[in-house]
Length: 94
Image (cartoon, rainbow, N blue to C red; front, side, top):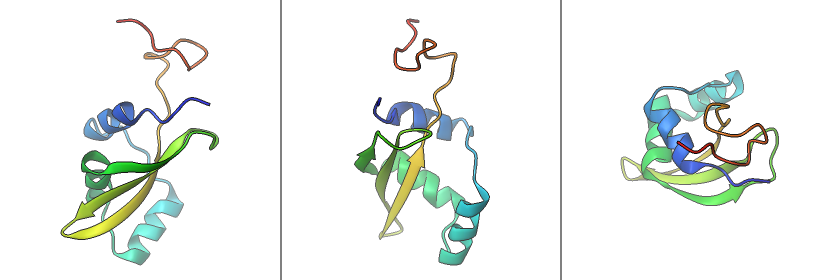
């Protein structure tokens, strides 16, 4: 499997191209975590454990520090067909 495209994930977050699953929103509410904190953790934190074998998309465990507190976030990224060849393993040349 291909590794998680962290740069692509971060670009998608900056551009607001993100899908929040109902399950995730419920967990965030239960834990008092806001969506912008999750985004900040992925943008400013580090991927401490990649999960390239996960399906349907590779994902990773990120550690971010939000207001002095550690926050773990698991995030996946669906690659854009505009950026990859049909095999989704090879980036298209600009």
